[in-house]
Image 1 (cartoon, rainbow, N blue to C red):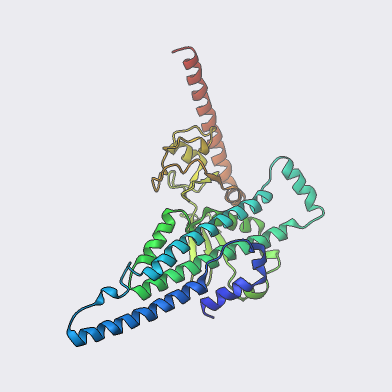
Image 2 (image 1 turned 60 degrees about the vertical axis):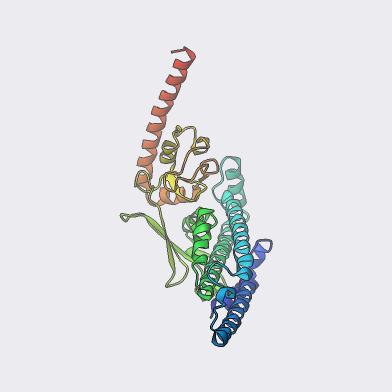
Length: 340
């Protein structure tokens, strides 16, 4: 089945009712625009060749050239940028809402345990998680395919450049830290005993997550199909060890909490979000990415569950460092108060 037909079937699928108010890529309509553009370019080329044969002149300036197709440029990149932003926003908000219920704290944890006596929330949450994974991956593939077709028709690299721009603007869907968090959620739920999805996704398109925390380079893998897989590194770029108490900066890069605080020159007990506005990501050097950092609770729970000894050892190290930093902080405050 071609992807266009598959995508249309997805939009009609039962799972899409959960995301009725969310944006989707207008794949079919954008393909029609490209098809019309291809026809226009062919007609223009024929006219130009005819003119060249008659008078020997070259009037190729009217032909759609690389980065100069008015019909496509006005439609594609503005629209795709908006759609990708809307999809990324919808995906992150829905995932946050879903996972907030799975790892509750305080009174919410007590209410959650009481609810478990009457309602099987676990299965409902797993099914909603699958819907969200299908949502983000189907739209991400639609964007990639339409951009590849754009470059093929125009003989350009504009589509490839736009994909790079999406990464810079933090709207590249398959690089979202919320996708990693959702994958960790599925692994934590051990959903092998949950009913498999029916209908369209029963035919093997459902994404499978796996995780290797024992190897030299710990990774999480998402398999979209037998030939398409994405790997997400679970190594902290600073300490070069498996992530502990991980945080995702708004640029998408993951760090241990202690490493992120050290890079931003703040104490661990103060937290990642207290970093100064001018603090830069240690990887991409983006500014202002600490203020909206996200604690990866599901990923932390996954590492805690599967690497218990490692997690406990890192916890002791972090607590020791926090005590040390707290002493330094209060000693400095005492000296300031005494005017020393």
